[in-house]
Length: 557
Image (cartoon, rainbow, N blue to C red; front, side):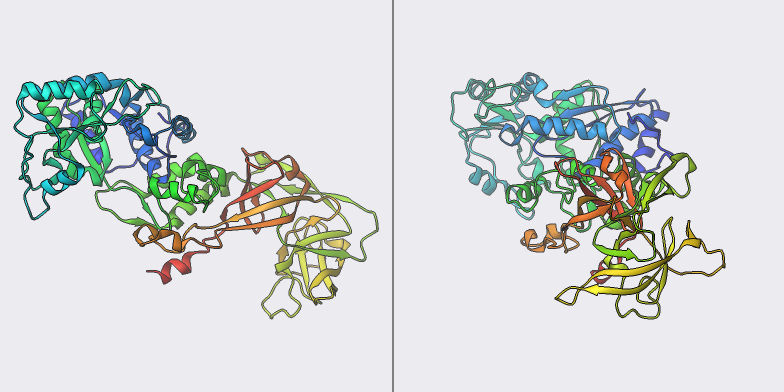
C-alpha cells in the first residue's frame, strides 16, 4: 500500500466494477497484483499500472502482490529484479506478498498434464515458420497441425521427455487444442510450453522447458487468488485464452481480467526493447539517464514520488488509447516543487560585475528566504561583496526599450541586496563583453528605495569571492518527434539538445552542502537536484519554471 494517503480518490470504470463486485458480495475482499517481467527497468508507463493496482488495493482495503513474470530467462537479470523492487518502494508502495512465476513451475507443469489428459493440449513438431503458415490470417482460417490428433498417451510421453531434457531446443512445442478456425488468432492452438535450455536466475538448470506468458499469467493469478487482473488493452484479445485455460483446468479461483489504456506520452518511448537499444547503442548513459522515461531516470532527474502519483491520478484510467502531453507530467512536478523546493541563487552563464563604489574588502551577510511563502522553511545568509556574477543574458549592450535588465545607464534590483546601475563594460580581444562596471545605492539595502523610485527588473546574482563552482546539466526531451515509436527509425529523431552541460557555473555557497534528497529552485532559472552519480558537484535540471515546449507541441498538432 502507499505510505502516503492521496488527497483525492479517483473514480474510473475499473473502480466502479470492483465496487459493484463488493456490493454484490461477489468478492469479500479485493486482491490485485503488479506483475512486471524482470527484463529491464520500469518506466513511466509501469508507474500508471503500479498506482492503479496498489491504489485500488489501498482504497478498497484489499491486498496487492508483487509478482515477477520470470519465464524468459535469456532476457532476465537479477539486476532488474532489484531495480523493480526499489522503484516500487520509492513510489511509496508496499506489497502484501512477493512472488515469482518460477515459484509455480511445478504447478504449471502439472496443470499442463491435466490439459493433455483431457485432450485439450498436444505436442507439436511443426517449426516456428510452419506454425505461422498453418495459423492463417485474419481473413483466412488456420489449418490443423498433422500432430493435432496424437493420442493422449503419446502426448504425455513426449511432454515428459521434453521435461526430462531429451530434445533439442525448438524440436517440440506443447500447444492448446482449441479452434484453428477461431476469428481470434490467439485461440488458434496457442503455444503453452517451449523447449529452452537457458539458465534461470532462480531455478538454475532444473527446467529445460518454460511456460508461455499467456498460460503462466492466468494460472499465477488464480493460485494467488487475484480477484481483478488489470492489464493494458493489447491483452484484450488474449482474454478468451485467459478464461479458457482457467475454465479447462478448473481452478477454484477465476480472476476477472480487465483491460485499460496504456500510458502513451508524447516525445517518449516506453518499449523496453527500444529503451534497451538506447542504452546498448550509447545514445544515453544508462537506464537511469535523466533523459530516460524510466522511474530511475526520472528519480535521478529530480522527479518526486508524489509528482508521479499525481500525474497518474491526473491522466486517469480509460479504455481508449490516447497520447498525453508531456506538459501534464511536467506540471505535476512543477506544482510539487513550487511547494517544497528550497530557493537558492545560481548563475549558470556567469558575467562578472564590479561595483566600483562598494568598499574594497567589505563583505555583508544578507538574509534570504528559503521559500517566499513558507516561513517554516527558514532563512539563510548570503554573502555580498564588491565583485559579483550575474547571468550573461541579464545584460544587453544595445537593449530594446522593454528590456528591464541591465544595460548602460539602466538600474536593476539585485535580489535581497541593492539597486545597481550599469556605467560601462569591458570587452576582450574578440569584442565580447567580459565585465560590467556598476555602481550601487547604499540606501536601497534589502531591495527597496527610501525615495520611492521603482525599478522594473530584479535579477539574481552570487558573490564572486564566495561562489562555488559546479556543473549544471540542462535536460530536455529526448526526442523531437511527438511519436518516435511510430517512426521507421526512432533514433533519427533524437533531440541533439536533450542535454546541455554547463561547466564553471557559479552557485551560492550554501549549495556546497547540497543533498540529493533536497530539491532546489534556482531562482529565475528552474528546478534542480544534485546528481548522485558524479564525484564533482553537479546538478540536474528537473524542469524549467515554465513550459518551453508549448509552441512546439502546437506546431506538431
